[in-house]
Length: 333
Ligand code: SAH
Figure: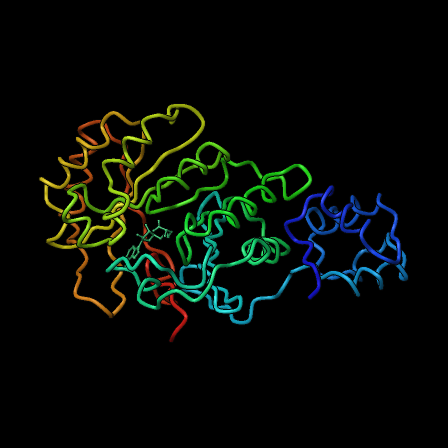
């Protein structure tokens, strides 16, 4: 097996070079990192300031870890979906940004009742390189401004690889993106959530969906282990009033969580937290009996929160015609 370089720091590449039998000068580690992270090279042959002989040694011992997507589908709204070895990645253009929605696992273990990824079950954890490859490859031809960990999988259920990927995305030696351009969305697995908040500066989005414990439990089995009250209590220990943003995602499910009583309970739960609420109209995925809330219910819910002083918007659904919208990512079909 060739050691994969994508995700490795200059220092780590240096020690890999030092371990080779045929020596390559250690300063070349910096050049290699430049090619990978700054010039978006996808092969050793692009590394023209490294001699052909040294490139051959590199090829014999390492792989860059960069793999092209196999299928790409383009929605009529400009959203594009890519398939990387059973993993889906979505590129979403909007007025002033180009957002990349990346996956952290192939499939998911969480089994949320409304989500297509949950329905396909869990296939495997993505490696650091597989997570980064989704950005690295697509950043070659696209001026990506934001990254959201909102694709397949639960990022905190693959915390090690996700933290390493964020390190390479934000490090000076790496892709050098501001952590304020990255949002990690999670159902809120507690110990890992603490680590994510303390060891990164990324924005955090929590999939809340129902402020009543028993009702959330019926939608999301994870509520049994990490309940939403505890998650919100933990979030109160951190600073969300300045640069870093906290948001809650709330799928609007007709007749299930969209009443004014639900809005009021949600408001009571989050009123002491500087945060934003993102209402997501439910996207039907053909495998369950949920329905999307009516526009008037969504509007009333949103107005209630806004009047209480909670910032709230309705997320516009993108890429529905190519199964790229929230909750539709699944690769079994
Ligand atoms: N597992 C993480 C990351 C995925 S983010 C998380 O749940 O936060 C994907 C977002 O889409 C989540 O907020 C998820 O709850 C939401 N979603 C899932 N199924 C959906 C559906 N059918 N319609 C609309 N949103 C959905």
